[in-house]
Image 1 (cartoon, helix red, strand yellow):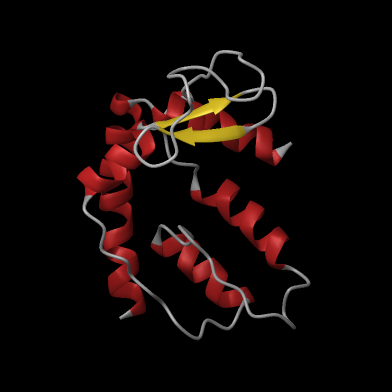
Image 2 (tube, rainbow, N blue to C red):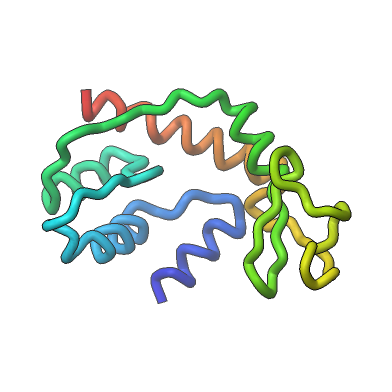
Amino acid sequence: EVGILAKSYIDEGRLIPDDIMTQLMLSELKGLDRYNWLLDGFPRTVAQAEALDKECQIDTVIDLDVPFETIKCRLTARWIHPASGRVYNLEFSPPKVQGIDDITGEPLVQRDDDKPETVTKRLQAYDAQTKPVLEYYR
């Protein structure tokens, strides 16, 4: 149920609200206390970082500084075969025939959250929300 709600935000190009994202992540992390793990893209806000710190011991934070234009190019080049979930990237893993799944011959689609205008909105929101998180962990 929470995942469906989260997907509705993603499909609109919006970031998932803190309470929903935190609930999803913390429920996944329960029971992993005996393992080492790496989170990618979480926490994105100070509120998420504070909630995570209450539940988990964080040893290391890594900030990968990738230019937005690079991220935008990679995401907007991503196309999928909906029935199987196969992912193609026009830059480094293109289909044999543009727009067609290699195995079934069916059309590929671009997810709404991979379209250029949506990616730009997501990256701008991400940048505004994550700068304070980097300061929080410093």
